[in-house]
Length: 236
Image (cartoon, rainbow, N blue to C red; front, side, top):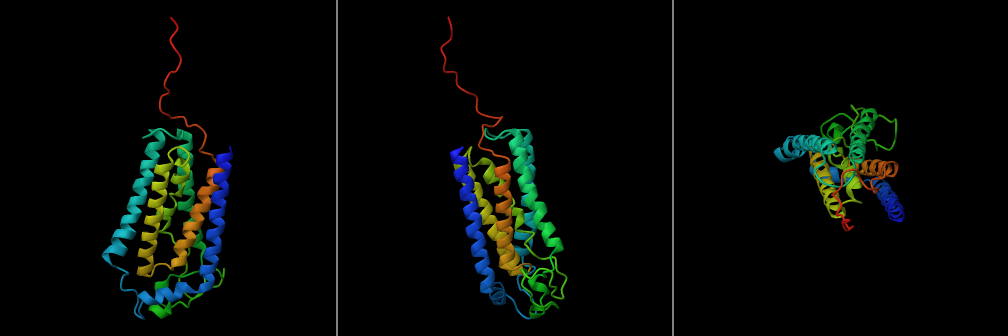
């Protein structure tokens, strides 16, 4: 369909532009510069704060699981007309792909968190995370952001609904971006992640959802739709 093809091209363009901006960010060295603004040689004052640690971190994790549970219920008993049950299940698969892939990358990463750096009271030296395989003397396993994925993984919900309920899908997109930024900010001020860690998580989740929408198009008529109104006259 022409509309679906145009949407796919737009998705790819967004991913490409975002990648170029990410590379510019990496080249700028702003990760360390901005982190120095909020840190001290003894660590990060916001590390255990109520807002960043408990509300945005712990509360964000609970919120993500609650939304995922609602999506599962919706796949079995749809709340509103739109995608078929199969398509809703495929949308959940896109969300889960992000929730699984990003932590897997994080698990094998040699990059340590800002709070592990000697400059901020730890023992590691700063090594850019794009120097793959170069250790920094710290515990590693800190790139990309595993917490921001609790929001950005739900890009898949936007892709699932955008052809059925465009306005609602845009609201979902704004909410996902807003919460992802809030979660990323919380982890940044705690010293748990550099800003780029959150940006890469957002980019990865967008690409995963965009590829998933190409593999499982949701623009076709769904299996759960509003009842059609009869337009033929009864035979007498």
